[in-house]
Amino acid sequence: MTVPQSDRLAAVTPAGGPARRAAGGAPGGVLTVLDVGGTTLRTGSYDPEATAVTRVRRVPVEGMARHPRDSVAALQHRVVEQIVHEVRRHTGGTAPRAVGVAFAGPISAGGLVLAAPTVWGRRGEPLPLGRLLTERIGAPVEVVNDLTAAAWRYAATETEPFCLITVSSGIGNKVFRGGEVLLDADGHGGELGHWVCDPSPGAPLCDCGGRGHLGAIASGRGVLAAVRRAAGADPAGFARSRLAERCAGRADGIDNPAIAAAVREGDAFTTQVLRGTVTPLAQAIGAVFTSIGVCRYVVMGGFALAVGERYRELLVGELVRLGCFGLDAEAVDAMVSLGRPDDDHGLIGVGRLLADRLARAGAR
Image (cartoon, rainbow, N blue to C red; front, side):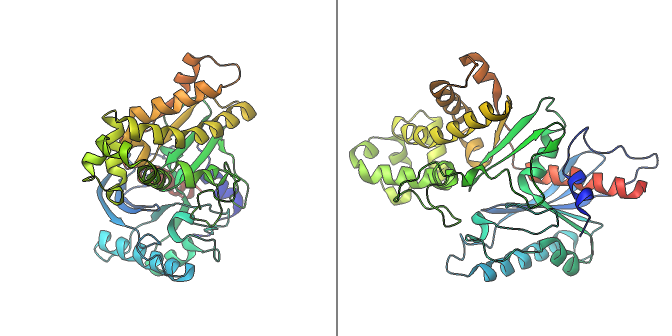
């Protein structure tokens, strides 16, 4: 759906929450919602009256993780075809009333996907995803950044300015202050995962092609690579770990679920590696705090939530060690919380956003 810039900015501004529906119930009916991440594509039905999502289906994204040798253009085509297929499957082949898509990448005010490092890697050509899907599906489609969508879920309960951070296939963030998301018309902002925190020539390679980006170090993929490197560098330490027990003693058998479980169980080897990846994230949060004074940080994403409270404790510990100017340890602890322990942030958020847009359109 192509909308004027002013309307699109209003659509991603959670000030005051969704618009009130007029008597009579507009908009009515269930909406089709999708959340396209670097690893998983989620599809569901969002009920604006219940503000809940049902019939959720999760499948691997047809991106670079499954097709690492494909070109960016080929991966873009695969993802578009997959979204169309999942919508048709979800609706039984009938055109839905409207579709909301939360997508892992910067989105311009004009609706272009400017990049998707965790989905198709290097930048490539901007993809007019909303227009393409509208033409193929035969219904209006709203495409927004996945964290912008997720903010619609958290804006309903957060009363202070906050920074939403995801630790999943990549790292991303969105800052909400004064009732609006801090982005420009070209989608710049909220891409903390591409901050260069390690400028060394041999720094880990990011999915976007750059080196030393926060997302290459502190994301779920970055942690996995770091733990595997540590297991290779210290085979004796790895062999004594709970992680080794879970992976049959093989470094190439390590995966993110095993890492998360080992940390939850208190495994010293795995926890030490994770702490090292959390340090640059704490540095980034400290910079956001000292530069603009945001004092609420909500951490979500599949990897962080899989580790759970121990991840929050490690992050707070690094923030306290590094220091947040003017705050004591108790205040630092209070400013960091975990997101809801489910996988529906983008689905619920984009559903709320889409319902709000339809309500506003119906009121005109």
